[in-house]
Length: 239
Image 1: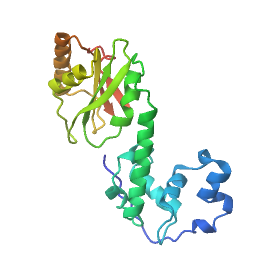
Image 2: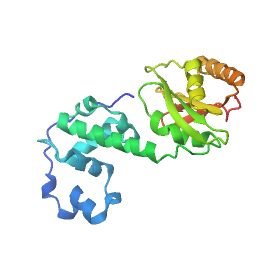
Image 3: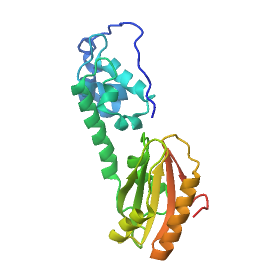
Image 4: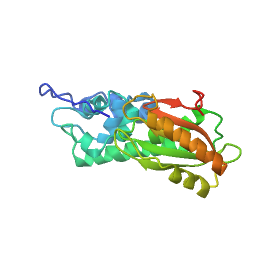
């Protein structure tokens, strides 16, 4: 993912938050009105705790959101170094942000029922979205299913760079056999945002289908993630 470069045209000293009306200060607003009343920038400002010499914490938070075009889903993918590109964010602030956004990502992952019954591509997408959406590199994952099409486990099979990842059918089916899966759904992401399957994607899908028939492990679908969208081989009649 290409990050925006945040530049300040000239020093613009903003009003410190402590001089705002009491009920408008992010922490007090949270206590008085609840978390739902705060904007994303105000929530991030609470994590930052303070601003810099020229901008307050809320303005600094807005610069963070500018890095990802206000796409809060992408915040969990930023590194400490990404945050430290912004003037006023040092190592301590950056590490606090990374930890908070990672907890948020894990919470989504934890809340997803791994015994979910997969009845179509939407359920498979929902199960893997916390792992594959908005990644800056390619990863390959597999969902192991029981005879009732309930998810037993999801696991990462491979990780690559920006343009590709290695997905070995032997490793995929070993995970399926070890996990006593009756069927599987495989998935990987395209960091480029292009949902169109490549020739390698098509060839791999055919190899997996053939291998699954030999092992009596049905390959139900192959999903390609691109940001918040996905492509399903099964939905397109390619399975």
